[in-house]
Image: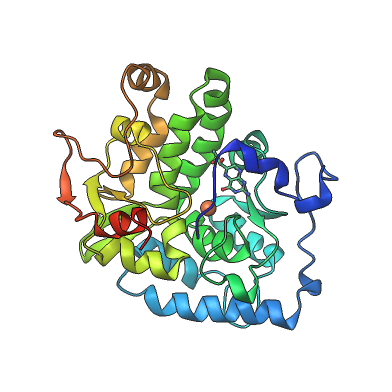
Length: 296
Ligand code: HBI
Ligand code: FE
């Protein structure tokens, strides 16, 4: 699953409905109104993805999932998720129609409310959709929010987002979120693992990110990531790898203001390029994206 993080789409988040009823864009999940077809889409995605998790997702993901009321049978009820999650890390899950404006998104995160798409993708869109739906948000994000480090990091992102907007550096901060919370990999003792929600909620990208020879896998470095553009409509060309999730603790604490200043002086980087200073774990062949560019 990919979803864009750029402004133009945001107004469309509520479909044709236009302005939301509530200022914070939340809606009722309306759990009782999901149809059998919608629960069946959930089941298909949940079962397919659950087979991939062992040996691919990080420990913390598996631990979070184990303790949550998330199963194959039905789309999870946000009230029940929030009961468990709030006791663990103080987070809640609230329903939104889809993408919400940046400032609304940040305001929720800063207050430990995770806005999750209420809708589920249609049966003919199982592998690709642009807006975050309930499967991406609940299967991908909620287990990681059971982890205290991720829980603090995502809140800090919400706080930093409001600041970055005022400073005019939101694209730089958004890349940090993209290459960590959404598409991050982490080196664990058992091997390379996924912690990024955009990867772990996608069947094809879970395979691609960890094992395909095409993408680069580079050690995470803050300034490098802030400079690196990303793809919203395809697999990533480069994945950034943490030594461990504790690295995010430090990241949530550092003052980004001087970092933004340094990044401002430097050029932006295309998603697939490598730099002399990179700590490269895998130099990708680039075959996948080269073929796409040729239209194959
Ligand atoms: N809204 N529901 C939702 N989910 C997101 O991940 C999201 C969003 N709005 C804005 C956004 N992400 C990004 O543009 C920010 O992270 C920059
Ligand atoms: Fe997401």
